[in-house]
Image (cartoon, rainbow, N blue to C red; front, side, top):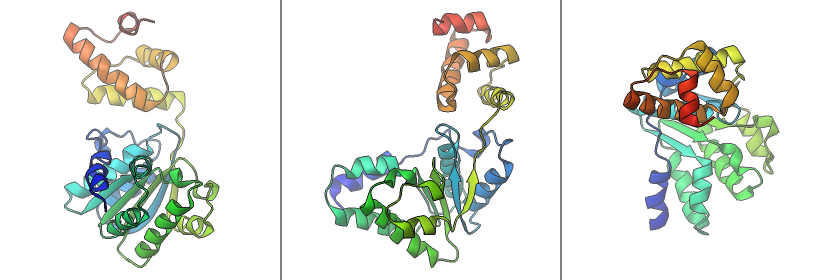
Amino acid sequence: MTRLISKQVPLALKLDHEAIFDSYWSEADPVAVASVRDLSKGVAGWIYLTGSQGGGVSHLLQACSAQALKAGFSAMYVDFLALLEIFEQSVDDEAVGDYFDSLENFDVLVLDNIDAVSGLRFWQEQLFYLLEKLKNKPNACLLLGAHTLANDLDCDLLDLKSRLKWATGFQLKPLNDTQKVALLQFKANRLGLTLPLDVANFLLARCSRNFADLSALLSELDVQALSSKRRLTIPWIKSILNI
């Protein structure tokens, strides 16, 4: 592997320390979350997790990797979007192959945004070869994340699509408005904030509904509320957000 890649890959694939199981609101998908938790404990299996953008897929994948590491397993989280960006700077196919070869030895392997290989035959082949090796490991713990169902992937390599279907599939359910409010209040509570129902509804109506954005907004409101010693009210939030 080239020196550039060996330095950049670990930096690009660092986990978000906030993405843990305790910070994930799991009431909408208890079976999927429980299955991912089992994988983080070394319970062998393949899981293919899908959901909308910002719907919690990456959060659960990173939580699985973090928990596996905490439990003493060797674990690796790989974001294919970040990986593709890194390897764009290298035309060394051998380096890419070497990197994929290194992944089969982890106790728990987590591959995020695998739909990023759509239309990229070489990358599909590397992923397929990796899955073929893992297929022969009876104790393999593999978690795959995407925003597209395995059957709907734009995949030139049909063998890869077939292999992905070996995994147990879970699709995170879209939240209704009541669940979105509950999720907002859950996240606010973790920050030590009291989020009244009317304020939660206001945020959903007037701000981005992407929960990565809403989480970042709550963190900012937490800082502002702490510094000004204010409660979360609609007038105060309007003044902070200039709306």
